[in-house]
Image (cartoon, rainbow, N blue to C red; front, side, top):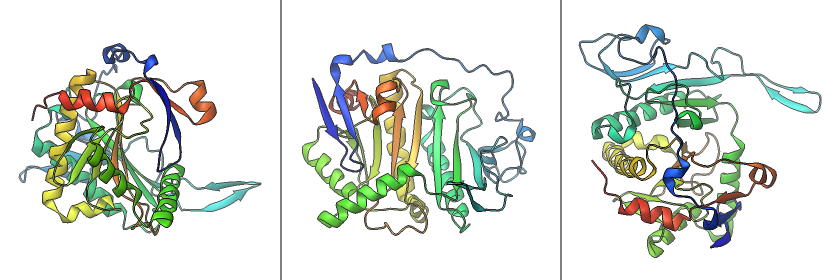
Length: 335
């Protein structure tokens, strides 16, 4: 089977070519990140900048042991909060000073583990850390977008084994988000409906790419998946702002349950794969509350982006989303 599929959001084309498929275990190469010392380990709190947030025992002190989730500034930050935001031309080019925030969410004191082994409570606490830092930084009116992401495995860009994710807050809206928002607005202007809500509704009708769903979330393989086993977690209710979840403890707990369910399948089917996790949400100050819909993207890094992809913007996916969904659906989660 080989066919071209168009993403209804970005209008990007993807080639689904199962003739190029390999068994999943052939994708995954055993990789090691060599570490002599881990600054995120319990007892090494003085190796990081002072914590911005922590969930810890009431009898413990900040920047000492006793925590189970900890957020610190990235010691090697891409952007700096103490820089004056300045936009200035450089000949025909545009440039902006490197103002912003770059933080690390240390997800657990345990070194040799991954999210599929987190307790439900631990998973929930990680989401609470995301939300509290997201909404805190949102108060800085210079910030236009906050990207929460996770790199797991060397191939996905991780430099440390210890489970952690990151947050970068920027004064500029990234082009990927602009593309999504423009696509969503065009769809809304033409049909007077949210494209994300329509995707949820249609995927539930055909039930070909859904892995599972809960009362408020759907976990599915996108129709025009760019990568094998690319998975989205999306609210079944309309919501443009990830930060709004902080108002509803039950929804946060449900998202943690859904995430744990998915990751337990994902790690078993793909044998501990490198992956990136991205939370896409509406930028600040952008009027897209009717058109946009926050969501989580999980992208396994089990194939390479090569010349054709770089040259054309097309992607070649060797595992159809229908097949990927079927494999993940059949796997029993361990909760």
